[in-house]
Structure formats: structure tokens, C-alpha cells
Length: 209
Image (cartoon, rainbow, N blue to C red; front, side, top):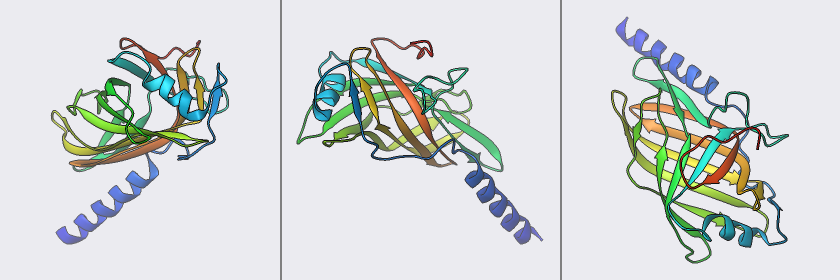
């Protein structure tokens, strides 16, 4: 009886987890369009992420892939899933603070801190290291295998990828596809389309910009 109940719980959890947390398809290498300057993809990426003083911020929102504008309510890119016995979890990637950025061997290593609450509980991820990689036609920001803790929720390993399909150098805005997941005490995943804006301090991305 107990064994059957455990199997039922495990199956139900798997179904729920697979059914939630995906708002759209993740595209890892969309063709990148540079706006506001006649420069190459790699030059645009360097200008956007490296040619500025650190620290600086990146504010994010869930966006419409047709217009590149924030959705109503300025919801953030998110991952949804389960923790414990059917505890719904939602992690939102609201803001990234880039503490350091440099150029090494053709890629851009970065050190960041994240504003990524789970169920509105602030996260503690420490310094999160990642890379920004660019080719002749595409670019992607990776934040892999980061240990995070949420009070009363537990310890997880978080992964995030932000591919880039447009860079607007004049307005310091970029858009693209995201994929976020974490596993450990809880498990969650999510994907979709985002809009991001460079800022000197934490702020919301305006859907009117």
C-alpha cells in the first residue's frame, strides 16, 4: 500500500513537472540582428557587455517574441516545478548584476550576482560565474551549475541560458530566448522569450521603451 502510494506520488510529480515550467521553445542559436550601429556580432557583444564600467545591471522581463516588448505585468523569465511533496515552486530571474566582465580566448567570462527569488523568497547564490560566447551569427549568455539556497526551501543547483537574437546598442537592450532550470531539494524548469535592458542600478524593464 505504502509502496504503491510512493509510486503514485512519483509518477504524478513527474507529470506535473513536465507539464509546467515551459512558456515557449528555447532556441540556442538564433540569428542575431544588431541594431543602432554597423558593427559585427562579436563587436556588438563586446560593446554591450565589456565596454562599460562594472558593476552594471541587466533587468529582465518575459517578452513577446513578435514585438520584443515586455508582456503585461512585466513578469520575469521563470522556472516552475515541485519541491517536497507537491510544493509548487516558481523561480524568477528578475535581475543580473555583472560584477566583472573581460575578454579571454574569444569568450567573455563574467562574474555576477542574481536576483532570482523562489516563491518570493530571496535567493542566496553567492557569486555566479558564467560566460558570454559569440560567433559570426549568434551569441549566448550561460550561467551554469550554480549552487543556490532559499530559506525554508532548500539547496539547489541552478542553470540558466540566455540566447540573443537582437542587440540594440543605442538603447542598450537585447532580446532572445531563455532556458532556466534547477535541481536538488526542488526541481523546476522553464523556457521562453525575454527582453533585457542594461542599467546602472536595479530597475524594472519598461514595456513602453
